Image 1 (cartoon, one colour):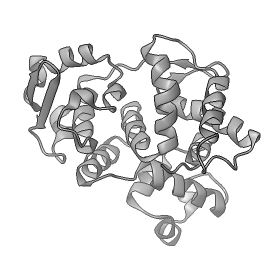
Image 2 (image 1 turned 180 degrees about the horizontal axis):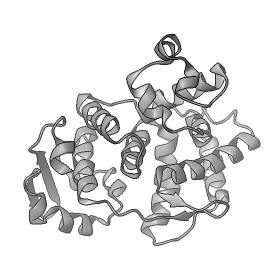
Image 3 (image 1 turned 180 degrees about the vertical axis):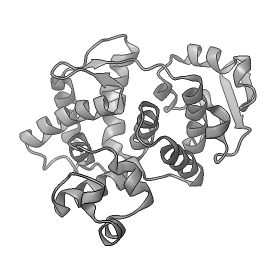
Length: 250
C-alpha cells in the first residue's frame, strides 16, 4: 500500500472552490483562457500546481464511471456545500491510503465509541507506529509526522466531520435523506463484495450497522433500491442510473 503527503497539502488548501474548477479544467486551460487570478487568490503558480496535484489525485479522482457521474454531477450542481464536502470526504478516503488508514485507526474508533475529541498526539502515535513498518514513511522526520497529524485533523474539519479550532471535536454528522441515498449509491459503486453488511465502507455512513439497517428498510427509500436481507447477508441493487440519482434524491 502506497502512502503520500496529500493530507498535508489539502489541510493547507485555502480555497476549496478550486475543487469544482479543477474538476472541469486543468491549470493550463485556465491560464490560457481566463488567467489563474480569475479563479483563485493563491498567488504563485508553484502553489497552485501543488494544490492541483493533491486535488486531482485525492479529492476528484474516480474509481469508475459511476463514481465520476455521481460526484461530477453533484459538484457541478452544488459546487462546495456541506453535502458536497461529505461526498468528497468519502471519495478522498477511497483514493488516499493514508487518509483511509488514519480514519480506520483514529477517527472511526473515536466516533463509534462515543468520544467527543481526538487529540493530535493520538494521530502522531498512529503515524509513528505505521512508520515502523512502512517504507514510504520511514524517511519522514518528526516535524513531518507532527505536521501531518495536525493537518489530518484540520482536513477532517474542512470535510465537516470535526469542528473547533485548537481543540477539535467530532461533529457526529447525520445524513439527510438525500445524502443517505447518495451514500448508498457511492458505496455500491466502490464496493466489490455483494454482501454490503461486511463492507469496511459502511462506517462512513456514521451509523451503527443495526441503525443503518433500520433506516435502510424504511419505506421512503424503496423507490431508490431493491433490497435483499437475511440474517447476516445484505444485497442492494440501484434503481436509478448514476446520472439520474442526484435529481431523484433531491
